[in-house]
Image (cartoon, rainbow over all chains, first blue to last red; front, side):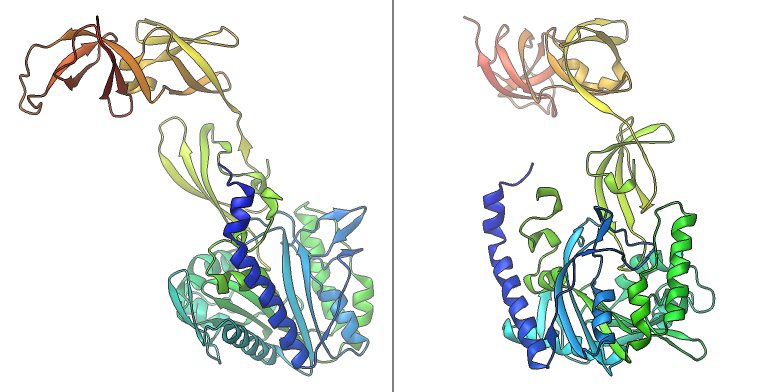
Length: 309
Length: 188
């Protein structure tokens, strides 16, 4: 039985007030760090071709699945510290932690790598906790979480060896990787601390730079708090040929699985050689708000989630 | 249908067996493949099981409709019901009804779920009113207190009622627990 709308909206009002306050704190944080707030289009001619992110189509264009490509075009044109809070749209993503239309915070810092960006994230989350009168400990779904920096880091290899019993760098099985990540690795994290999972296999680099070595690792880091996948950071790849090769692999896979056609984002690829060394991150604001509202479901922090919009 | 369209209460056919979806948990690593953890209830035997699907998987939806049907009479091991809208008659085997059959009185309206012409489940009202046809004079078993006695109701079921209930009275019965609730009217 559906809950009465006005009852529901009164019940979550404190969460929505907190949400607005969190937006204010985020903006103040980035302004104080010298970042420029930017806006990029929500309706776009191409999206990054990604196997598991399905865009909505509108009049032959797409609703943006992420502001990343446009923000990097700004960076390529000389903008050095930028952030954005915007809506992203991903088809079929609906569940306790997903709404097909959700709010993303992205920021990019020229000169930084993925670790520098994770340090930004630690400072941002600590600032939020302080402004929300939490000191450094919050309680989320019955777990006491100490947010103090630095957050413990664990490499993908260590985490998988420990919790899933295999090494994704020895022989990568992407399907098993995702299942074990969800069923074994994330549940195995210490619930009393945020966790940074870092250094992914090269095949899972997406738009991240590869650090040569044995093994070569993708400079990609994901932050988890209270079991929530909160943010994904990269040392940004600026090798256009390599990026194009990765996109083409995704396009081929999409074609092979008969899913949908996809094209290369040409303007982004043209701008990429001018992208300076930089780091960036995408952080899910809805989940951040959930964390600070002790909300179990994304529906508790969105006025009109998909099913009742 | 695509697995993404499955919600609670969707009915699926898996290898020919119908299941009702009791819960869907969607999990997806940001860059990874979506996973759907389904809790399923077997519509034939009521058993539950878990099943995992991945985004892009296709599942077979079955249409299960529910109809108000009136109980007519018993024929051998079957109970005959009539659809109140189509007047079509359906034979329901006694195994499908279980203990519910002991509360079937001619004219009782039940909610019947049907999948592709096959009856899956008969839901009878939580409460029915039945006439006491035979009262026992005294209690013979130790489990029954002095204030209650066993009586037989018009459908043949026997249950414990308070001592003041007489033959010819109409009593309200909870069909889930097969227990007496209250006396509705008494024989003048």
